[in-house]
Amino acid sequence: MEETQQRVKDAVDGLIDDLDKNSLRNMQKEMFICSSKCCEDKTNTRESIEKCVDYCNSGMKKAQNVLENELSMLQNDLSRCAMKCYDDARGQMQSGSSKKDELAITKGLDKCTAECANIHIALLPGIKARFLSNKF
Image 1 (tube, one colour):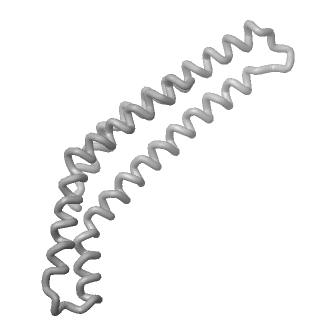
Image 2 (cartoon, rainbow, N blue to C red; image 1 turned 135 degrees about the vertical axis):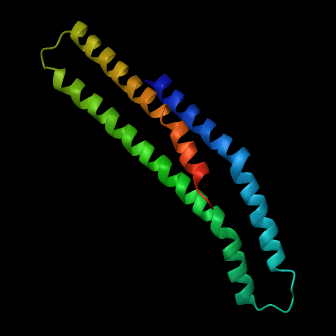
C-alpha cells in the first residue's frame, strides 16, 4: 500500500516539477519583471502601482488556481476509487473469516488500490496538456 502511495506521489511530484521548470518559472520571471517595471515611475500613486502589480501577478495566480483545481479533482477521484476498494473489501470480510480469507481480501484490496493508482497516474499527461493549453 505504501509503495502505491509513493508511486502516485512521485508521479504527481514529477508533473509539478516538469510544469515548474518548463512553464511556471518563466511565468514567474515575467511576473517579477512586470512588477518591477510598475515601480519604476516614481510619480505613480501607490494605488496605481498596486493595480499594476496585481495585473502582473494575475497570470501566475490563474495558473496556480488551475493547477490546484486539477490536482484537487485528481485527489478526490483517487480517494473515491480507493474508498470503493475499501468498501468492497469490508463487504467481503465476515466475523468468522479465516486468516487465509483475510489475507486474500487484503491482497485484493492492495491490487484494487494499485489499479486506482495506475488509472490516476495515467491521467497526469492529460492534466499537463490541459494546463499548458491555458493562456494565462
